[in-house]
Length: 219
Image 1 (cartoon, rainbow, N blue to C red):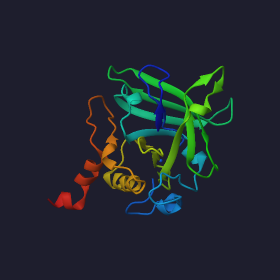
Image 2: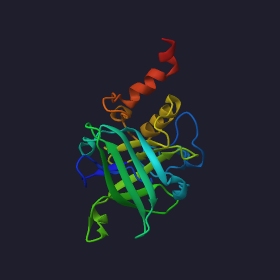
Image 3: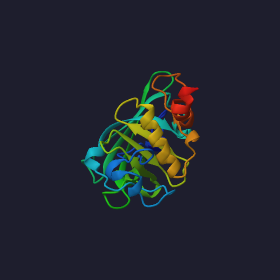
Image 4: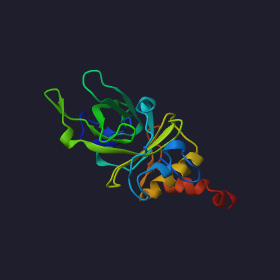
């Protein structure tokens, strides 16, 4: 979910787009780690099916960014085919600290073949034209074979979002996702769990995974 400059107060202009996980302890079917362009690279998955990716995704964890600072809870993104122009509509939503709902509207498009999870997203338009020169990269680096969770990255590794169809996912899935980020060169401690309610803690992903590990449980 790459959020960029804000379009409305309180909403980070994000690229939680239709468009992010591979690998880890178990293979992720046809879009697993072995299907990425290279180990250690922030590379898009192959076998990507846009039709299955459309719909609503809930943010499970993310690397904090200044443009999401007003989002206090329940961050989500919805993707649909655009009717006015070619591409994908992006609707990012979140709840601010005062309980108000904020939304940002954008467009996404593929940066390469449409069977790979490499896209770009823009939330700025001028005179009805979307400004693609300032779009942000949105790279799906891993994806559940049933399209129940996705891991989104960025070549700089300064941005990352874990998204899921449900508001919560279990720690086994989180461990698999964390492994995918680590394989792509990310520090998994930079990803913080996203609050579902205002005031929820933002625990580092690495701590959540470590606490659920067998060795930790036995101690």
